Every structure is written in C-alpha cells, then in structure tokens.
Length: 377
Ligand code: 0PR
Image 1 (cartoon, rainbow, N blue to C red):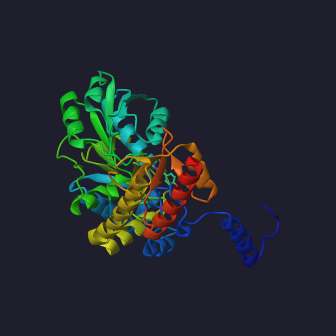
Image 2: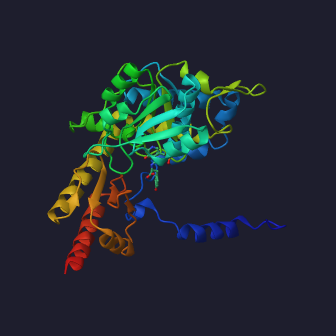
Image 3: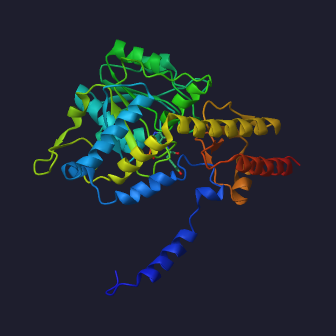
C-alpha cells in the first residue's frame, strides 16, 4: 500500500483497466459458466444492504428476517414446509454443512456418492476427514442405484444424489435414493445447487423430468440462488428437512447478539440475503418459469443444431448440453473466442444460461459448423 492515497478518479481508472481484461456475460461468448448476470433489482438491493452482517444478526434483525423468508421461499419451490436452513456463500459451503451435519449426527465416516457429484463433495470429505466412495453411473449419467446401495456398509454416514449434475445436467432418482436411505438408515443429501432453480419450473412447463423431494428419507438439499436464481454472488442455500439437524453443526458464539452459528463463515453478507429476497419477490414463480422456458427453448435449438451437423450429442435433460466433438473442434472454437468447458470425459460442455440468447446459439452453431466442416476436409 502506498503512503498517500490516490484521488478516487485515478483509482477508478485503475479499476477500469483491470475490468477491461474481464469477460462479461453480456458479451455473449461465455458458454461454460453456471453463473450469469444478476437481476438488476438484485444488484441495486445488494448495494443498499452492503453493511449488514448475518454473523451478528441481532444487529440486523430485519435482514435476518429476509434470510429466513428467502430460505422459506426456496423450500417452497420444492414443495417443502417446516424445513430449516441458511443462506451460504454457495454450493460448496452448503455441501460442507450437509456432510458435516451427517458426520456429527451419525458419527460414521464414509460417504457414498455417484461419480458425477461436483468436486465440492470431494472438498467437503477432505476437509471433514470423510472417506468418499464414488459409484458408477448408468448410460444416462444418472446414479446406478443398485451399485450405490451395494457400497453402503456399517461405516456409511451419508449418501448423495444430484439434481442437475454439473457436467451433464442429469438428475438422479431421488425417490429411489430416499427409499435406500430409509431402508439402510443413512443420511441422504441432495445436491440441487444448479437444478434447484430449474427442475421445478421445467416440470411446471410440462418437460418430462423426474425430480421430487419425497416426504421422508431426504435429510438436506443444496440449492444455489447465485446460479439459475439470478441473485448476485455469493448466495447458496442449505435446507435441512429435520429441524434438529442444524443442532449437529452448532457453534456457541457467547458474546454475539445471536448466540449460535450454523454456517462455516462467521461474518457473512446480508446483502446477498436481501438481494435473494428481492429477486424472489419480484420475479415470482411466473418470472422464473419464463427464464427457464427461454433457456430450455434455446437449449433445444442448440441440441437440434448440433444433431443436424452430425455430431454426437447427449439429449439434454435440463439446460446443459454435452457434445462429443473431439479436442480439435473444442480448441478451434476457443480460438474464435468461445468460452467453453469440458467434461471429465472430454465432451464440450455448454450451459445455456439466460445470457446465452437465441442469437448467441445461432452464432455459435454457425461457428461450430464452419470449424467442424474445415476439420473434416
Ligand atoms: N454442486 C453442484 C451440482 C455444482 O454444479 C456446483 C458448482 C457446486 C455444487 C458448488 O457451488 P459453488 O461453486 O457455488 O460453491 N458448479 C459450477 C461448476 O463447477 C460452479 C461454477 C460456476 C464454475 C460458474 C464456473 C463458473 O463460471 O461449473
């Protein structure tokens, strides 16, 4: 740090220089991200609540109410009532809280999860000293329940299912997993970090996707407002279906206005909670349904376009498309400025977020056609 400060105008110039190196979702080239430009109202509200801290919520009871109401609205999306939960910094923290609670509740040390789980589950297990057993998935990239069940033993504390896998957007059979959890008496965590704000709306729109949180057998669910919820980063959410579960991750904070904490982070942003509340109230189910409808229509356009080009592509379940096009095509598209990502198996992975408009899909298909054509010659 310099001894003397700079005038704000000069600092702004420095920031603009740095920002000019960043990409923006509105630039229309980011196809491999599960985040998008936050809703305008969310941006505004975030700034308004910048000084609030939910780590000392007694000072900010109004903002704490917004968190509580946001969590209730998220639970309502899944048709759940009477759940408790917290907003988090994202899906990683939510998954850590879930497995932390499972470990402390059961005092066992093994997690069994399909190999399609997000790497935050690896991270959580590493952090919590848990052994992670990964099980095979079926040809549709969904958890093979027979295989998963066969790996549960007397050391298993929890199993995990995914509602919208990071790489393929596929959805595990949560009802089937809940039956296994009840029968084997293990904790079940559902990671719907991405799919939580997509699947309920796809179902309402009549898409043939199975995703239901049954009345019994599911212990916790991750669901991220900062992905398809259009809320500014950092905003994730953990829901606990049993109100006693948060007690297993409780830490005393004796001198604070609120005597107990249940999140990994201590000082935590109330701005994200206020922004989540605002965007949920403003968009309503109708608004989100429209966002998801657009994304899914563009997903189908992209899928059909890729099929037309004769490339191998998985039929998308949600707004995630995986194309088996080979590294040359992937690299050539990258050189043309497309920001894509790859699955662990090397497929090109495209997330059709709200910023991936119909025009972006059209432009991308045009470039894919020319690249694939040139490479074929
Ligand atoms: N669970 C699932 C199913 C996820 O897809 C992710 C993140 C997480 C948990 C962890 O969430 P946080 O990153 O909020 O902690 N999936 C995205 C991914 O790995 C995260 C992401 C988002 C990466 C935007 C890049 C990006 O530009 O792709």
